[in-house]
Image (cartoon, rainbow, N blue to C red; front, side, top):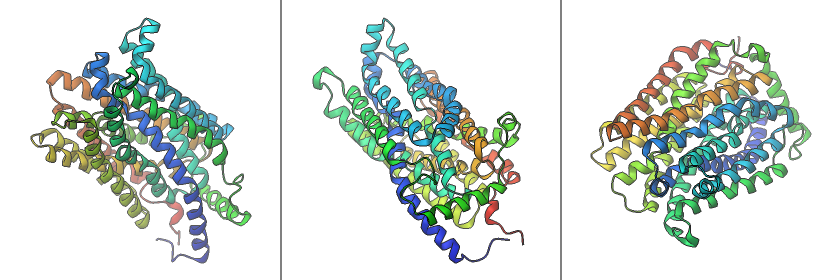
Amino acid sequence: MLAGPTSIEDKNEDKVYKKVTWRLMPFIGLCYMISYLDRVNVGFAKLQMLSDLHFSEAVYGFGAGIFFIGYFIFEVPSNLIMHRVGAKIWMARIMITWGIISALMAFTGVFATKLGVSNIVMFYSLRFLLGVAEAGFFPGMILYFNYWYPAHRHGKIVALMLSAQPVAFIFGGPLSGWVMDAFNGVGAMRGWQWMFLMEGIPAAVVGVVIIFYLSNGIKDSRWLTADEKSVLIHRVESEKKFKSDYPLSQLFKIRMLYVFIGITFMNVIGIYGLNFWIPSIIKAAGVTTNFKVGLITAIPYFVGAVAMLLVSLRSERVNEKRWHTSVAAAIGGLGLIGSAYFTGNIVVTMTFITIGLAGCLATNAMIWSFPGSILTGSAAAAGIATINSLGALGGFFGPSLLGVLTDMFGNRTAGLAVLGCCEFVAALLIAVFCGSYGIQRDSSKVSTA
């Protein structure tokens, strides 16, 4: 049965965690928003760069997705290094290097000419290097939360961070569109080049700030009192008896690890398939300026941000994870399939895309609370990175698949339908497997009485 009413100690704990959240989340959210914008702004650049660099839809889709190959290769080593050397130095390194590479995307054609390679090869190379540079950032943040928060608080905290995803589009979409329109032709550079340059520099700047703002964990946080540190350390340590710190050699024998990877992979296919193509879908519907494309793009991401927070808050309140996540994934699948077949009207199409994206994003927020429910220590560091690196390969397959099917059939119907089916597979995996592995609810909040 569930534990009894909230005690004085529980209220004190809530107060301390509120302080921690206000200290960490605005800054971490800003970092993630910048990272996400630099990862997906290629979707807006596509509106100009395809004709400038002579790319096909399939070339664009492959190049957008190859980011995740570099991400995949270096993800686990990056997280293990962070666990060893500390969060702030490693997170700073990640942000500074990816900011520089993202800005260099502006000169894809210039570098291609100087190095004697094709624009396509240079585009693929820079996108791959961007993935290498950013590898470890997201799972590093998930691991960082494990240093601070017990598992039952992860859903809301991860949702707060992941809300930076849609926020990156809510503000970044109109910003990207405006930069591309306003700066097009300034200084002999095209608008998409200015966009990469202007949106890459902030990552490097914030990377330097990380060194002075973040602490590596509870014990070295100067902004906490001794009593507050004691409360946090006790809560995190007391929960470890419900988790397992497997030797790394045994980690890959955990069956649930592969279920988590499958769920993440299928959900990411849907998310990034949309992320890299929504601007093109809107432009194809007859929207005239890039700024207007950005404004319309913001709508589904605003709804997605609200859905993420509402689902995670309700899940935490009733202490139930599996069915909240599975239903969200199924709704995402319905929306994507609807957007594939109801294409005659931009309002109807955007309605289905909004429903699909909201379901996908809510699912994404919830599934990242799963690994912390069963793993701790080095197993959590390697496990989270493994899930994210393999699951993130969906970010390669989603855009690539949509690009190939669009070239093959002359429209996006088949591609969007496939993305929707992938979301249904994620919903099924969650419903069938997660209950038997303690993902139904947080064990540390359940009394044995």
